[in-house]
Structure formats: C-alpha cells, structure tokens
Image (cartoon, rainbow, N blue to C red; front, side, top):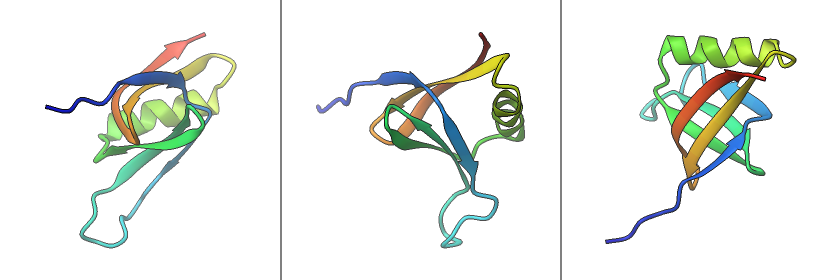
Length: 80
C-alpha cells in the first residue's frame, strides 16, 4: 500500500473554475500554497464564499490548506 504525505501551508492566491473545461471535468477551487497550485473538486458554495471573504479581508483572515500532491484534503479559514 502506498501513502502520500499530507503537507499544510497558508494559501496566498486563489481562483475558482466557474465552468469546468472540458465539461466532463468537475468544477474546482484552486489555491496557491507551498509554491504550487492545489485543487479542491466540487467545492460547496459555503467553502467558495468563505475563501473569497478571507482573500477580500487579508488583514483579518488567512486560508490554511492541507494537501497531498495537488489535491486539497483539508481547508480552514482562520483569523490572524
């Protein structure tokens, strides 16, 4: 059995796929953390809103990401 390490970092950039391309793909939320882009497939509206609010208020909030390779496995929005 193979396991991949989980790493965490603070996200410094983000983008949301509003319509996936090709259409067979799922929508994703992308966060730049640990010197690379990481993705969360099919993020809920609440997750998207929380991340957008955090980036709109960077003096108050930050987004912490846990990831394995490029895939996000955990995500929190926290106050500084």
